[in-house]
Image (cartoon, rainbow, N blue to C red):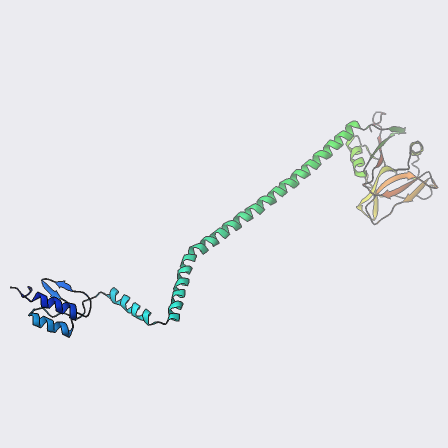
Length: 296
């Protein structure tokens, strides 16, 4: 019989001793011998049974992980209930933080993406507003061109007067001063709103005597360039007021932008007044005769 074989024993006594005396844990098999954790009582039962064995450590070998778990379990069991609750809460917070990290990263990323999209929407809105303003300006220009074309094609002088080498054309269509100015200029051949340069210019008298001047007629003067200086628009010469002609009454205010109109006077044949340029009035064009013909 080898050293690793067991001697014949009284199995009944051995089993009884095991059932009554083993105080802990598991029977381990090592080769053909039975190894076990034992107590003094079990030693006595072994001797009585006449069993031979190889001495072993009371505790079987255990790996480091086992001891770490056992140590942690022992330390945990020693904690009070309150400390256990605090420990679970702390572990829960740590776990929650770990789980929230991807959510926070995703939220920040979504915030950046949302900001970029919002900036893109704002930029697109600005571009659309710019396009809208451009379309509005283009439409206004187109309407102006159409209106000017309509005026040029449809307006015919209601009254013409030739004096010496000059032709006067009166239009009863009531429009603003700048529209009247542009209309006369677009006729070409030097046609412009009428300008009066001296007190000797009585050539207008027959025309005015046959016209209702109550509403006024636009002439070619204004202070639009400089509110304190009145100029004739076509020649850019200052307007001189001559007082010794009793047929003319002057009222040229300064300090605001006005345009020159001729009206029926109170104590004179007519008066020259500065009025709001947006007012709509009849207008008077004039030009030199071309081949003895009026070109206005």
